[in-house]
View 1 (tube, rainbow, N blue to C red):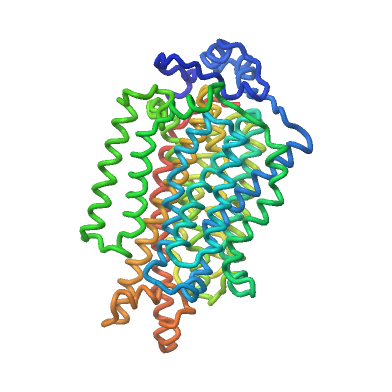
View 2 (view 1 turned 60 degrees about the vertical axis):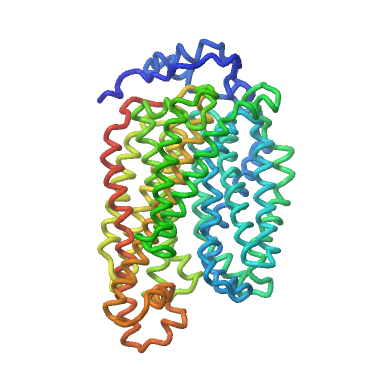
Length: 561
């Protein structure tokens, strides 16, 4: 394999007149300027590799460090919960505001906000990590307050966008703070905690939302509760988080070095992409002018962004939004693809596994959430296992080969399910998917950081979480299109004469008025067809996992730790 050779991290750097120091220096590492380059040039020499990979020494230790880490986990939990919390409160929102035609925007607005994750990741390589993170938390809480106090549907949609915009900054800031405060050997374990909490939050979001919607507190407290939790952990954020200033420059010079043109093009392009995926086949028909326009604009922005990344004359290479030299290293390209697939896999499985039980077993939100335990317990177990063992064993390629094989096996079996498939079988199939997710999701950011020069550590976080976000948007968009179109087509065969909106109403759940109005025989036929539509959704995981498995064989076989 070509990756048995030493790791080359020496990229061409433009002379910009601004010296950007090692972002790990502020937290206690005292390497000489040339020592890192020399150690990386002989990365497979064991003695020098140990010295190079030790990473920063934490400036915050003991109880203070654990309080700081707990504050990071609390914000990640809130962001994850709010990603799925509206699943069970949508009927209550419609009862409050009406305007059912705008319902899809509640979820879309959050996704549109999260496309800012790559610019946030880049900013975290320049600005003080602690205060940038805290500012993101404040922005997220403002969005939560707007959602809770919203007097109209339009204000609620705006609040969701604000939540997404600042929430993804919270997630990127938490990862970056941990990355810049830990050594290479301990980092995977701390990252595994973030992944576990994010997964748990995604699962319990609908349960929490449904509980508030059915209580006297009303659905508005699904958002207000964020303010309470943030207030509890605010002292730990302010007094315990390490203050990391990656670049010692005046604030306005940092602002000027940002790739503003790249940021605008990236945000516009990813917003068009997210809307094209989300609305295609549901809000807009595929042949409509609006849908075609969204795809055309996505392509134009993508081409423009690539050109700006390569040729941008006004910004130095190291300051450009996406680190172009990452695209020249096959290992880093594969790692980003792996993160893209595994994030999409986890989100799709979390969204559609409960739906199987809600349709075929009549489960409510709480029961359906409990059915996710086999999936999430394996995500948690293998995330922790990876974080503990990967640094000790040194090699990372086995985790990717095993992980992609497990998700491929699990998704293939889920693709073959129907309404008669037993609970235990579905538990086993989703547990396989969870094993794969846990093996890869935790590893990706830590491995990417270990492969690059320390000055690129922040870029590695930004690139990986960017791939994670785009993967989630892509898989959920495609899976939603598959579910809506296959479901409507199958139901149209047993209910001829029904309009498409009526058919789509039937696939929202067995508790809908449209479903309850059917005879018992027809209800069972609808359940059978919807179950097949759900199983077809797992085709996107199957295809992605197959490509991920093939690509994993080309990852480096050298010892990383």
